Image 1 (tube, rainbow, N blue to C red):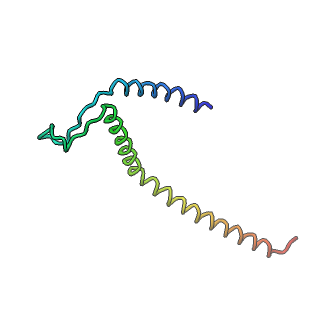
Image 2: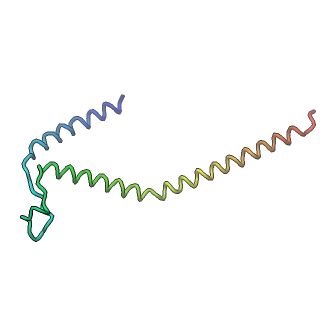
Image 3: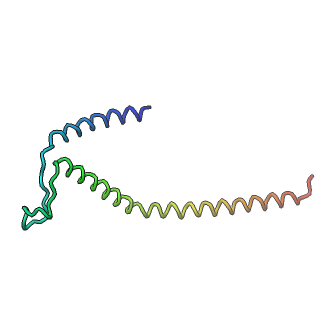
Amino acid sequence: MAKKIINLLILLPLGIILIIFCVANRQSVTLAFNPFRPEDQVLSLSAPFFVFLFIALIIGMFAGSAVTWLNQGKHRKRARSEAKEAVRWQGEADRHKARSEEIAGQLPSR
């Protein structure tokens, strides 16, 4: 419940600010990819300004996620190897337990 309230307190004002920002930046701008002839229509794109900002935000989020995922690869590899080792040690402990129960069953009872 507290998480929902916190999300509401953060996401609602952020959404309102984002909507106001989009409405305020509706004018069309041209993004030119040709630095030598910016007026060239083949390598340019016209759209509202907020569209370019959203695209930049999305690309930045994907790039940041990819870099984070790649940097954490060593930790995921270590976790996999330690999980395999834990399973191996658990199997060995089970074998020792079964062997000890077998030996205990063979001892004469008093």
